[in-house]
Image (cartoon, rainbow, N blue to C red; front, side):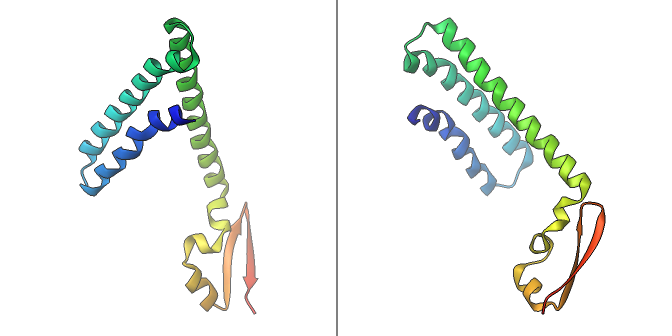
Length: 120
């Protein structure tokens, strides 16, 4: 658990690049942080698991591949749910919760049908 946190720390620190709003700087910083995190994973995994370097490299490659598959799957599911209109199904998502409580009625889309709700 500590090794996972140590490997990902550089990715957390990359968030400080958001203080200076520059897209090229953020992209370069994120790419450098990902490269360094993968390097730490490849270098540290054999020592942590007490296995040869070649097996550790294969294990680290598998971990990175599974992470990429999970990332792409989440993005695909976001697109599918967004296309179905499920982002509008939560009224507080589009309006603030204060505006929702102040309004007498609201309309939101759930799936492919329109639903009307009345707050009494």
